[in-house]
Length: 369
Image (cartoon, rainbow, N blue to C red):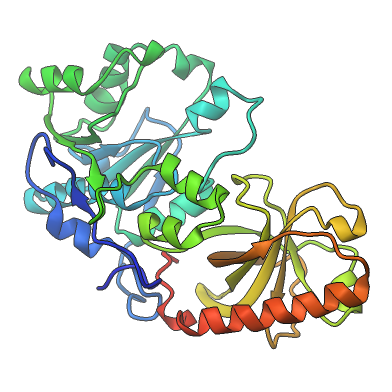
């Protein structure tokens, strides 16, 4: 399987120091760098099981190789951590399990902040299932969990819950009340025989850029979706139900599908070349299009939403789930003097988007489905 299909994705590799403990993840990381929707259908034979409570995890989950993290974006660095745990799982005949938290702890501690997530839970689940995770424990992060000390965290989740044989984390992983636990504490637990441990060092691209959710957010906020895709291992997506809008697009010859972006970080406002994905019976059909992310100043609107014009498409898709993959940035949002000027600009944007998307056939879109 090849890399990200946007013409510039570099292969992930450990930064200086690489993997701090345990075996190198390069083979698994390369395998997980992206998935072609067409070539990979049928790859999975068993659906990932999702658990919401650590108490009473079934015996089949016990003895797991466990990867722990928030994994917002499930970018190539995250995939290296999970892939390393998967390599250990396969070599040792263990199930591969992931422990994550919902909501993201940052949302719990700073609820007044603007949305920042790259992959809300539904998107994260889809990606984790595609990269062959066996079990996912999604723990509700609330006041009780936030007060859990790091010693109790290890006991409750890893020793008693998963009865983990092996644990894999990133080099900067911290946990427990007051962020009191870190990889040094986990190493001490491993030395005491509680479980084996692998700590994955910072993972970088060929230019030395560390794969991180913060870097990806900065790329998207700066109108650089191609750079974000090279770090994610796929184009960044949003998804949501198609909502009824003012139907002004239809009236001027460019009908749009309106999708809320409320649960996601806000990318740079403006027009993008996109692929719009519609699910049907478990398959996803991708259609080229262009999308405006913005406030629609020509019509004196102030709320931010996403309006997707799907090329050569006339189906009624109201209330259907639509996935929107951001491929390239065309221009910033601006206010027009009237409908005629707006119509002319949409036509130019559509022409530009078609040219940009010709280099990225929908059949080659590497986005875990």
